[in-house]
Image (cartoon, rainbow, N blue to C red):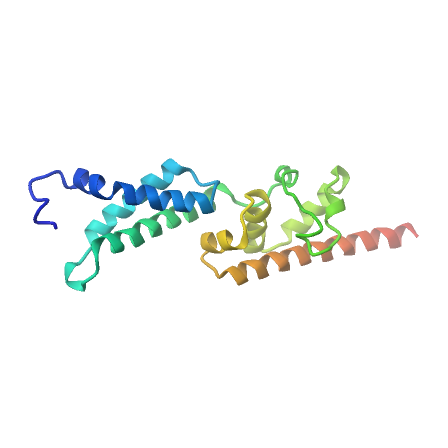
Length: 189
């Protein structure tokens, strides 16, 4: 294939041939992660394609299209991870208003009634006590509306582990909130 492309603009020829593959992969990722910017996915896919061209080895006996598709997908996911670390950061107090904590997601724990203004400090303290990964999982789930499968792909962990982290974080928040509420009620008695 590479001999056929000699004398032509290699980059343009590759885009012409495989541009639809990049778009298809970007659309698939966008469907699973609606918050991702489509144009950014296309750019990341183009970078993945260039990496695929640079790394492809005919002697390995692998089809170029399959090799490129895997590299394109990987470049898009890697780019989303990098962006996620920069963009999302830790949950801030202002973002708590956007978090939809309900009793079903909290496993029946007493979080649903705490999103009142006078309890924001209590919730903020509980969230600040979480580890970075617990904080990030809650941020992705409640603020970005991602499910465990999508969170696991972004963090590079298994779906079960992402679920376990979320449950652990919610449990820690609930325990901390319960402790504070119990201490308040004991002091008022």
